Image (cartoon, rainbow, N blue to C red; front, side, top):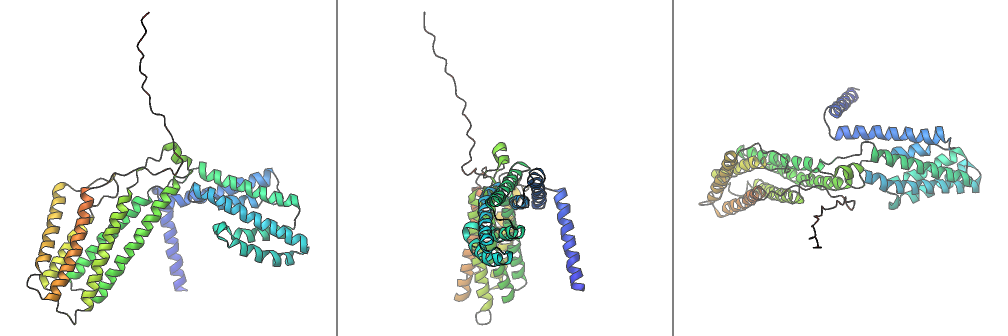
Length: 406
């Protein structure tokens, strides 16, 4: 009972926080709230047209179709409308045939539901395959199987689909174009935190358990990269068939694709570094320990790299809060620490010298990748329209022809 009460209290706090965030600042919470209100409004409008004004015999198909098609993007609404309509048509026709042949509702369900469930699992229906079975249940429950009734079902679902698409496209169209920038910022923060954690752990003589935890955190950077790619794909989908983007031109600048590759290379270097640290701590009992100056140099290098990660820009519109003197000082600290790390291999035993050389190579590639981003920051670009381009006429200069002499 206490655990249930604790879970309920936590969920209530999360819901309250999401509601406050949706009211105060634009973001994912506000977008979800707007989409939920739009779905409810589309369902009410579809019922008002199909049930109240038209008095359709099975008006429930209209609001049901409308509420399912208020998607996260306008392109998804248009693409999913065909899948949903095909699923509804499949369920309607299958249920009508089963009801006409059997003449009994229970027998018709036994015959039609396995067919609709199996056919709805086909990938052509996407996530709307269940709509075929649900429509068959609706049709058999109402008990009307004539050709006119089948036509009514299809027309009602078509009306609901059109209303859902129209509401999603023209009533506050979804324009979530900041996911890429937010994903890059999250990637930057995760990398900075991990490098700082490794540097602090090395100063405290970390063991194998800590090294394995760092390696797991480095592998989670791959999940952050996957989220970054999904965010870029979602942003491109937002710009498809979106009237708001077509009218306003989608002037929000997206960070270039180069930054995705940059952070992928950084994540790979951090992962390779943690693999070396895991091997080093696992063989600590059988191999001679690294010189203390090598561990100190590695910790200082990673701490400096973490401070340099804070300088990584996410977009061209981001203001740089650091002056050139602070930037130069951070780079000087990083390279001096790396020099001390490399020099610590002198006089060490062959095994330790080989390990120090590997650590120095990983950290050098890490610093060079950070330096490459500082030297060549690509400019952001506006999102693509994916074939829906607004062609603007170029101003043409009219050349005055010389007048003929009379």
